[in-house]
Amino acid sequence: MMLTIDVIVRTLADSFRSEMLFRALDSIQNQHGITARPIVVVNGESYDQRTLNALRNRPGIRFHYQQLASAGLAFKAGCRLVTAPFFAFLDDDDVFVEDVLLKPVMWFENNPQCDVVITNRYYVKDNGPVIEFACLADHAVQPVLSLLDENWLSAGTGFFRTSTTIPAFMSVDKGHQEWTHLAYRLCTEGRQLHFMDVPTALVYDTPGSMSKKMVHQEAALDLLQLIRHDSRMDILVHKKAEFKYRNALHVLAMNYWRLGDHKRAWCCHLASLRPPHTFKYIFFTRKLLWPFGTS
Image 1 (tube, rainbow, N blue to C red):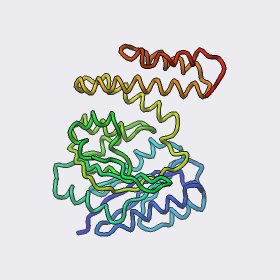
Image 2: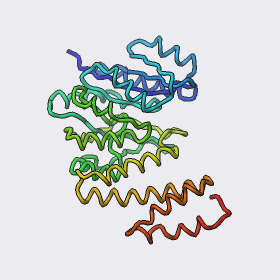
Image 3: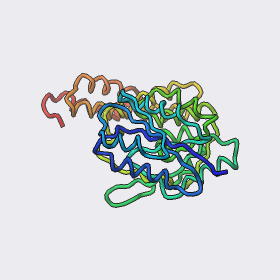
Image 4: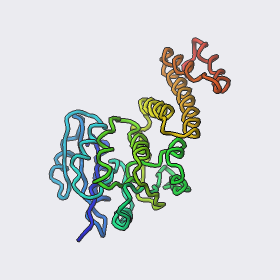
């Protein structure tokens, strides 16, 4: 019997990303040795009608449309449509490596106690693809502590056993930093993770991607706030989360200042000065006191 996996693709289906979207779907459906079905969730009203029509008529996919443009709601909508024993996500501007999906699914088949397989990826810039994680397996030692250094879970690199992980997905209510929130939740819920150092996706540096927006930085601050107050975490996690939290406040203060939002800049800056981090960021006060430049 052919192994199967569902792959959720969230998209606005706009004209700018239309070609990339169908490239992503091809990379899912052209896998060998496994049946991979795209679940395409179009959210919002900024879609391109020709793209939408092509999606409705495309064979082998599950199509869903929601009127509200919400990445968080699209996240959950896709999960509700999963029927395969395993599932994954892929961003609409990225692609899976050729014939790679069989590897994580075979691991699940041979290791029934495993809930999540985390893989590597290529990050594609102008000068070509670069491997994302030099030592992916190192994250297995202390996954939460490693998460504070770099997010090891993302679309295209996370594969999930449907029966044990869907509830965690349905509890995520974030439209930004949702992958880091999810990784943290999977760890705290005791899910069995396996880090497989195999590149499964090519992730493209697309202009205007969600991760480059200001609200993404604000969401990171919320997650760090959650971790630094979590009594289940050990002292090393709390210490690193505290350091990252104060640094995130400092970065937000600088960005708010550049945008001319001086009130928020001051709020973040003052919050970043809590000991023992006071002297690290105090010199930024001079810039906030200077009433002119905005960059």
